Image (tube, rainbow over all chains, first blue to last red; front, side, top):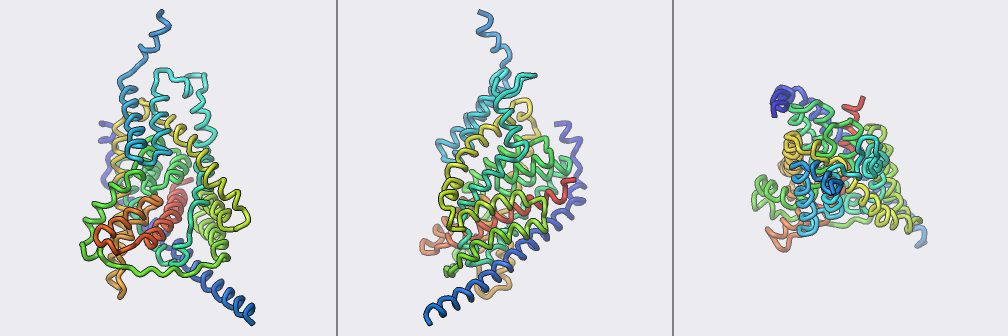
Length: 58
Length: 369
């Protein structure tokens, strides 16, 4: 208990807020990139499969 | 005669308390069906390692089998990574791939991890604080890998908290969701149109994610890579037998050893400390703020959207799969028995799985030197 109280440093919360900002920014950048890539993949493969089926029909 | 009772003299009240804790874990697993695959082995293991001079763990120069297993599979992160292959093989990214925008909620619901990091840093050094914060990933293997890589002194408590809170998602999340949303918001309907996803997309998705995550957060590449490898086995269409083995036999085998090996870190002298209680509280804070992060993000988006989103789906962004998706679905049905959010919530839930692994990678990027 004494150890915990002795190590209690409330200012560390404020000092480490930058990790919160960096972390959330990092997550949104990576997930954003994955999201855009998925949209792109969907678009590209959708077109390809459409034209494939058109070719088969012809 | 003395031989028969002399070990009893080594019995300590703290060991008996650990037996009770083990009993509670077993009870939760059997009676409440809470993560039984992990809580039951952990509960039994907690009893096993807290018998006086237990031969299951290393005593002096005499090596114990659980300590050997710990060094062979957890200290080097092998078990959680192998388990990730099985988890990857179990996940169907279909709902997410047909609605990629849902991924944003998975990102927002990692807020609890970083908030808890700041909270924990008030009591612990940064490596321990980061390891504790990752409990909010709601993902056991990620917690183990991050805790091990950062050399946390509290790995036992972190693992117990991570798995216990995952099991408690149906109890933790509903009050937070209700607190942050109005009845009207909880009744918002969301149309779900299942757009077809090509096989090419399904195959390229795990490969591309591995490359992107590896380029941006290289420390996460083992975690993401093993998860996506499992998914590639599932989606490639030519390895059905391997996929089935990864989903069932492999995942089950690793889980058996994982649970009981984690228990080797639950020895009374290490576990029964005030630090452990504080870690359990911080783990709860992480889950609460993850849930709040997802819900509040959805509410913010609603300010700009014409077609409103049911903010409850944001809560499914925590990685606890598939529990949190089901929780949101059930809450929606409770408000309106004709409002089905299962597919949207599942999509968000799956994105939480990816986002939590990336969060683990980012944490390692920050603190692994």
